[in-house]
Image 1 (cartoon, rainbow, N blue to C red):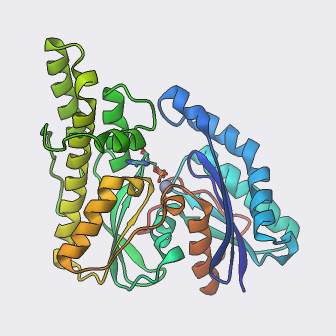
Image 2 (cartoon, rainbow, N blue to C red; image 1 turned 90 degrees about the horizontal axis):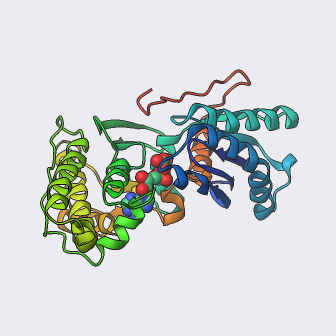
Image 3 (spheres, rainbow, N blue to C red; image 1 turned 90 degrees about the vertical axis):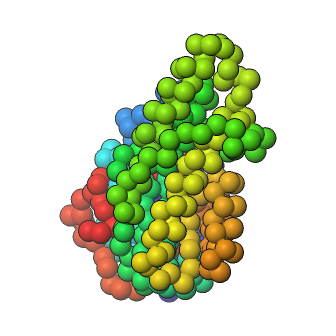
Length: 334
Ligand code: KG4
Ligand code: ZN
């Protein structure tokens, strides 16, 4: 108890998971390849693809978990933040299923769920500090209990993932550029080029100045040497990645000055970055703090994290009605 089916459809991944008694039994994700042709996620195409994939994905998640529909105790869905049309597909599917089965609904905050992904595989002590880095968000989250958390710092412009994707685009790499920068950076010299590390408020982040600094630098160099990017791709990637990581780590350390964390956690798609994972681990060793990072499948968007969040909400009696609405700008802080 309880057995919950969770559905995630906030961006470009259609995902379904089953959790039983707090343990993930299945986590199936259909990733939408179509967006790479357009250099970014196209909302209308995302909604259509969710609509196309959702029944099959839910069916596969139930099948892998060996769970029949009537054994479910609740149906959870991502309420926000995310793309409105994409969220509507997941919520409507969840509502239809809940109505047909006469089961309660659980509405989950996607950013909260990214943080909760850390609880799937680890016993994380509280209070702890989570750095959530994704394509749409960059947040420092202070977690004081299983469902108690607040955002204490966030980006004032681009997200860390956008910083990777937009600078990758300047280098002529296809979308999403983050994983490609990561790969090329492994063979490059991170100290070869220096780019701007813009400052934001106390614990906030800013990345748009970095993108502009990379753009001006490339324009200048390419004028003198047309194949500059091709010749220096690996060093460029390593230097850009290093700058993004140092901005992230600096604010994390700054937060630790005022927030007495017992552990550090990472969450979101950018936590798949090998340089960030390494640097975060090293920071933990330096500060003598345990560091937890979800395995890859729970870093990028997935329904298992929605299911984990829903599990705790179920225990607290936090259910939604059939009149629930999507919240495309849903904040952790309410
Ligand atoms: O959390 P996520 O899957 O989706 C959102 O909710 O946004 O994050 C996607 C972001 C993209 O910007 C992608 O480029 C980035 O995560 N990403 C990476 C890596 N893998 C994914 N960025 C840097 N290095 C990676 N290895
Ligand atoms: Zn996400």
